[in-house]
Length: 575
Image 1 (cartoon, rainbow, N blue to C red):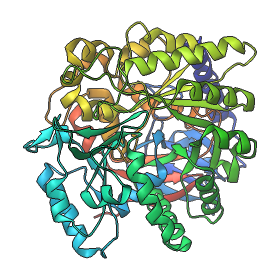
Image 2: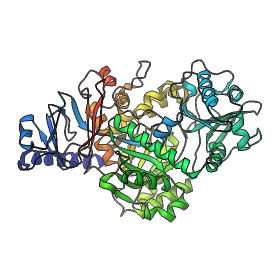
Image 3: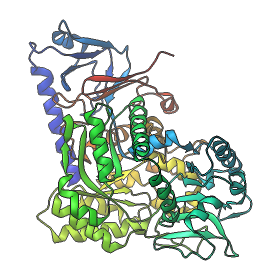
Image 4: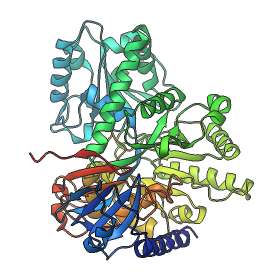
């Protein structure tokens, strides 16, 4: 049914484009014209146009260079893209906008090749910091280190050497997935953590075989350290915290537009953060169009959700109509909730991090207030149970139609559950780059059968009629769409081998997942996602035609222009 709906939407868009392209009034003069391009509208594939005309913030006409001439006026700005590729702006359907900016402010550990390098980076930062200041970083991943730290517990290092290198500063280093952290002795002391501290519900304090804490905290156990850090933040002047957040949002905006992202779905922000985003949009400090999932506890949702349904605010720069919840953790930290134990650590099957009663209550709040529910589920058990909850709630409310509830990540799904996405009309909000980033340890965690039949099953889900929208989960991964698109169509790792290529997307499917499908996933397919006359003039000009160039040329593609609402917000320097 969902597949049929998408076909009808696409057919309608083609008709609209045909009518508009043929019957636009020649008396209307464009404010902006892009000519000499290879234009992919995403309304249909196999046909490329040469030019796009923009009036105000909307697409006026798409056609040939000759046809576009009649829309040229005395004040029309013309950009000759000299044969470059023009497409709808990328729409990252799952990222953390504030986190993207904070990653620019704090230590970025994604490129650290081993534990020694992490220690060096943190120690260098501590030398520049005042005594007592927290050192914050993110991006380490124990499975990607060479050599492995010794000693270790299931690959995780001990805090000992880190603590010796940073005696005067508490250190908090988040795992690349965001589902575990490393703390040094000073941070654990401030948090009151000892060998005897019990695991909280939905979390784990990692100990060695003698019962000694290693400094690694998984899932909800991270809160024990985060609470100590938050106390430190509250002691700072309120103005400093606000100043840092504003800077982070502006850095995130710059990062996104420089990489061709015109829209982004923020995967969980507080009411206070939404207010700040709204203010910065009003002040013209955020160009990217944001859709935001609310990341608040149920008691806060019940109090304030009616005040935060925001549709198309500030000329479609802010929409809030979704709630974010978490079913489990991440595979890299063995927090993904699995139906069977992990192959490499059979003592665990992962974690359920939010009580199911809380998620059911969130579902009811969403239904009562016309919101989407977007639930993080990575493991096969987490996916099965969230689909069970969705199905149960849908049956209780047969009058509620076109809900477009989502499963965020949907990374490991049992073949028995894969058909349920399309059957229930549930969107799989997946991230292509997670497949190739995680590939080095998936078989180790799950074994070959689950890796082959369950992991990042794009082809299986698409063939069953599932709508997949694409994103990066930044700052877990780089927000850059080009490596993500490449991962989606090749499943090729940095090392050059391919992770179960039979599950690849076609290039057309990957482009749709990053444009019109992402717009559909936020109920915005009528205003964005394709270069259709009447839709918002959100476009990106790329140096290469990513639909046609040889496969290994895709990663070399550069963003030349980013255009939002008919305005050039980014232009690459020639150098």
